[in-house]
Every structure is written in structure tokens, then in C-alpha cells.
Length: 300
Image (cartoon, helix red, strand yellow):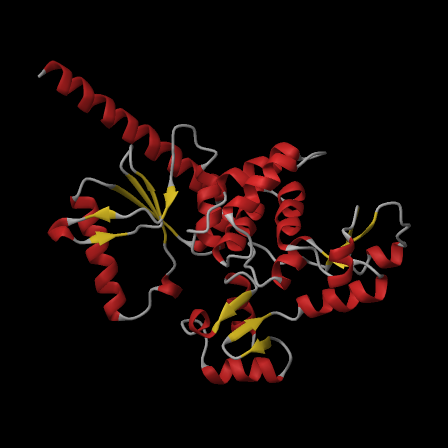
């Protein structure tokens, strides 16, 4: 069962059967569901039980499920699972120490509609996470909200005009860079790291033409600098046929003049300093090459 839980954590806390297939067998998954280690709210859809615990605790404390717990409740993927259920209580309510030992409690104004539903609305959840979480975590959640169409680009634009209070610059940064084209938190976090690299503009799933007129859509592309960054995890690339496709894709991109850099899940999630260093050096190299080409053209 540990393999199933590890896979669920890596996949962002919620997953489909197709996403879990490379990690675990049908038998292992069935046993995990039967043992209550993983929940199956509907056929082909799985989540970790922390979401249900959060709802029960929110009901007991007359609170609402919020932040990462709300994101999971909406079916979104997260970079890291909350160590305790994350709840919000009305501002001014006294929260006992015993309660804080069981949940991560935030005090804020609570929309009556959220109170009735027991969970913050999708847009409120995005804004709350952007206000209180590190940028990469908040971006992964906002990307997932857009990807699942729980919120739309117009919703984020409206929120950006209306947001006030502490953390406003952090919220605006998340809303400005959120994209539903990111496939998962792995890609979102890699893009978050790249956004701290001056002069680098990596965008998700940009179509690139390769030899023979075919097109591929790398994970992240800077069209101006000719840089491709791939969130590359062998768990998602199993089988001989997939290896053939990956090698063809890599070779065609390199031969097409692209600088291709590949990062594993461990690099992006646990070695962010090194990952950023690679992107900084890649940017410096690409800019130097670009300047040489401009100088050569000008002198020709």
C-alpha cells in the first residue's frame, strides 16, 4: 500500500486510474481502497482520505475547509499535502490550543455561501493559497484550478482587480502567471522556478515544428532564447515505445537548434537551487549565443 500512497502524493493528492497505472497494479490499488488508505469517490477517480477528515473536522468546529485542503476538496492537484487539515474560522473567534493541534486554522472573513457549503469557493481557495503559500505551491494550485475549469481566466482577472490586504503582491503574481496548460504540479513548480530567472520566459506546452513538418509540444519553451525545459519523470515514460518517442523528440529538438534541458521530479521538488542554477546558466549561454549571431549578421 505504501507504493499507492507514494504515487498519490507524487501525483498531487488526487489521481485518475490512468495516472496511477505506471506506479501500481490494479490489485494494489484495490487493496488500498478496501483498507481505506485511498478513497474512490467515483469510478476511476482516487484521492487521499485527508479531504474527508478535513470536512468532518470543519463540521465539528463550525469552520470551513480552506487553503490546500479546499484545493484537494475541489479535486485539484497540489505540490505538497497539508500536514493537518486546513480550516478557516470567522475573524475574532477564539481558537483553543487543542483545536490548533488538530488543524491548521486561519482566521478571516467567511462568506456565508462558503459557510453553507463547508468549503471555500474555487476562486476564494486560489486567492487564499496565493496569499499564504510559497509561490511555487500557490502557482501549482492556481494552474490546477484553471486546468479543471473550476475557475476561468476572467475569474482571475476579476480577483486581481478586487484583491486587497496583506499579501496582495503575492496574490497578483500568482494570478498573473497561472496557466491551465501546465499538466501537473511538477511542471508548475518548474515554471515557478524559471520565473525567478531574469531574462527567461518559459511558457507551457508551446507547439514547436520539427523535421518533416511534425509538431511537438514540450513542457516549457522560451521561443526567443530557443530553450526547452522538460519535466522528465521515468515513472511517466515507461515502455519501449515511449522510450523510442522520447529519444526521437529529444534528437529532433536538438537538431532543430533548441537547447533542451531535462529535470527529474526530485530535481524540481527537492533540489530547486540546482535547478535554478541550470536555468540561469542556460539563459546566459543562450543570450551569449544570440548576441554573437546578431553581431555576425550585422557585420555580414
